[in-house]
Length: 538
Image (cartoon, rainbow, N blue to C red; front, top):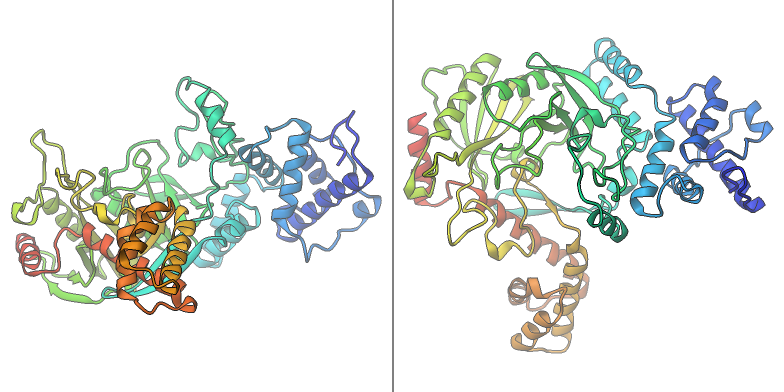
């Protein structure tokens, strides 16, 4: 494609580039991002975004809006990213190409005020779900929600003693380009970063940074749009996650870059959220290391349309909260220790939830391994709260968390134990508390290698000792060797047509154990007795 004055591409390149931009603009018109009368302006805006000065559109295109029924957004953005690399607008890396793609889409996006007004209008005129339907579709059409990338995730469900758990191997987030890593290492950090983190609302419209820039790599956000929502008397921002883990995965962010906190104030904000968007659930990660999420530096919630396995769990028993007659309490049949509170009275539910949190913050039960504070006063207890409306009732799921460590479990007593780290080592955050595993992409190749080793050993009549050696000798299977031997023992007649399903089921059972490790009150006689001591204190 001829991209700038002085650059000459082939006729084929010129035609391709022109048609890609024409198609992109017509696509933007069709999905409502651009008005038909703005097509000529939009064409030039895309040229500018990728550092090009030509070619111009066909005369016939200027006169008539074309059909975009078969338009491929991902393919078009890939072409434009190459144009930007060729024009020198961005570096020749994965990060550079992504910034160019987002710049092109950002040039076509309605301004934030227009999007916010559209959301508020639909919320009032058509209802909350109509508002989120429209906003979510816009974020998908704009390429902010990466539908093509999300579709690459590997997902399945597994039946366990806790019901059906959901497993995802996350392949949607792009791997870091080695050239970006090298550039970041060669450039010392200078001053405070802007935006301060990827959850700050100052990301809206931000052009992104290369790894070699002083502030380090930061993704482009020209096509990000945030709508305002009032939570606790503050104007928070609502956006969708670009690499969604579940249906309509949204994020609500505080207006200030401040640490996460779980307290009465933020539980009230969760209730505000479901008052405004009653068809969505919303929850907060715990606010302590080990049991918290991956970003504790910015106050935020996550929500969406999904019904998680935890929400389908049955009650193991009920309990009363003295002084909270309008609230029903249940202990869920769930691997983590989760109390479910329900009430038609919002204020009553808030008071009861605050009571549970206050008691748990200071709860020590050495027999159960729970220590409220370290010798220096460091807090160890908190909750992972989730709120949603269920059958007209305000419903709060309060997962009890404790982040103590020990010589035996230096990464956390109530954290996946070492024998499970080959599958899951990272924090068990909000999403996984609810029964959806987010597993690392390395597992695709590693689990496939395990499957092949098991089938080869069975076909060749290998002994357990030979299989163990083969597993240990292969870098892909070595981390899984002990587990793979157990899988082989449990499935001595493994058939090739069943092997993939067997491996997936076994991974699901590991995740089930991961959640059991994270539960503070175990499902044995001692754990039940310890839980009842807490319930009595409530």
